[in-house]
Length: 225
Ligand SMILES: [Fe+2]
Image (cartoon, rainbow, N blue to C red; front, side, top):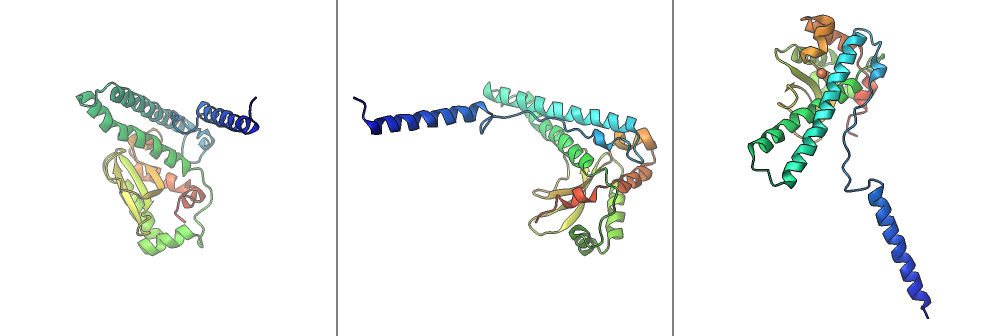
């Protein structure tokens, strides 16, 4: 004869096992998913950016997503095969940050475009910019001047969560010059592919077009509490 309390424990164990199996099977903790390119096609039609240039830029961005996934898979495979001492592993490891940041910086860049309203005078971000740079115009002049620097890369307005301070930073290519632990707020791409299709060498005109389309609500939404 089966005792009732034994039946209760058996039922509970069966339930726990079923829950555990369901968690694994439905992509819970322990499952690693590939990055998926985001769709920024809603930006098409934006003033100062041709659809052709945007489509080219979206394709380049998708390449970074693809290569980030590829490198992550390849590095995991090599680690599993004990090939971590090989020069190939070291080179892929160095390359990973370049591809990942190329992906993420583009997402932040497209994500802070498509706006139509200026930054509200009484907004938290405007007050913080004024406190850090003297005035909004002084901040904008410094951001634009950073974008006019020779070379290819990014300009990032970032917030240091430790001190609360804001900085305009130059990122060389995708991976050199990042400040550790900061929150990127506003990101501008100044790789040549971002402006040459529409503006040739007139980088300042592209930077102005970028400023005319900043989505300030998205930028402010990235600030710390
Ligand atoms: Fe780009």
